[in-house]
Amino acid sequence: MRYTQYFDAVRSRPDRSIIKDEWIERVIACPEREQIQTDGRVRLWGAIGENEGRWLRVVLLPDRETVHNAFFDRGFKP
Image (cartoon, rainbow, N blue to C red):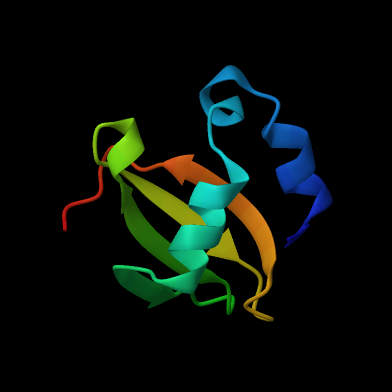
């Protein structure tokens, strides 16, 4: 999995350190919702059953391969 320096830096935060790479890869492989931002980045959402069904948002660079951000999106409505 490729990721930005920003993602590498923020993933050590307590609220982000619980996010497993396999969950990120799962959302990338099979997102339940997708949205393209105006800057070309791609937002993907997927429910993580192992974490009480919380919605994980993964933000990819326009190349659709490089992870820029990943976090549990409390405001997401499916």
